[in-house]
Image 1: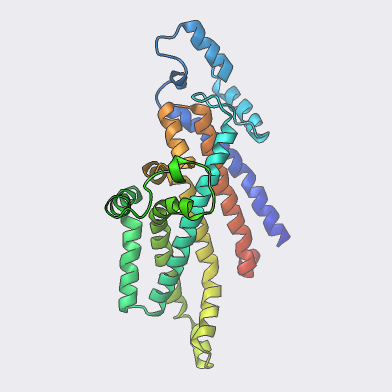
Image 2: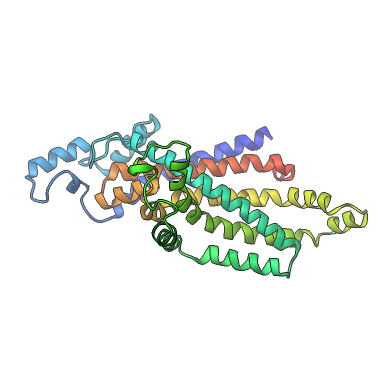
Amino acid sequence: MVSYILKRLLYTVPIALGVTLVSFMLVYLAPGDPLNAVAPADAPADVVEALKSAYGLDKPIPVQYGKWLLRAVQGDLGKSIASGREVLTEVMSAVSNTLRLAGVAGLAGVLAGCVLGALAGYWHGSWIDRIATVLSVVGVSIPHYWLGLVLTIIFSTWLPWFPAMGAGPGGSSEWVWDIAHMRHLVLPAVTLSVIPLGIITRTVRALVADMLEQEFVVALRARGLHNRAIFRHVAKNTAPTVLAVAGLQIGYLMGGSILVETVFAWPGTGFLLNTAIFQRDIPLLQGTILVLCMFFVALNLLVDIVQPMIDPRIGRA
């Protein structure tokens, strides 16, 4: 087990380096000048050169990458061109909000998907299976930003039950676990949860239906085991795959929430990333992408480590 974990940690190093390279290079493929956020288009040449020197944009790209990577390892992601604030401070504040939103949405989607998938798998071909299949197809197919707009119209305009924007009363971005703040969390969390709900439902349904046809399940039934005991064996054998899929879905929620956070003006990494793109704020854009990618890498590493604890056969493979 120890050697397995060390191998996974070793494999993570080149992946992390590749992530830093991609995070740094992608922003240079977009058109536009990042200095437009702090200098007008008709700024004198000496002013433009001074700004480039201040932000390190006058160096060759490999040199910029090396210096940026060295600072990033030390926890320094630079300063935002548009606001002048520390990028790490802004990103970590946004990450906490996105983690809160993605955590609630992921938990709701995974739990609901496991329940629906298990019911559909056990009663394969029944009306429960058909309902679960329809819900999973709708969850996977429907654009979540469109669903967010529909939910806002219904539950914020027609039925003023939940706020439409912000993370707290009065547009506050400070979070407190009370009813007033949790009401702001409902609509974006429900919107984000439909995709993992659909994928987990389909995955669990297929796994349970296939597992019930395995010879060991037939043998357990022949021995007279109750359905509850059989369910424990089925759940134990399907858990590693479900865990891997759930980990990927929560990672996707962290990086794929940009449109949902923009619709609901949720002050998370998606909203911050959208702002950085439109302002062409390269340090903020690079820092946000890097943190999101590293979170995804860390989440996959965690799943790889937890899976052998559930199924020791993975560690021996």
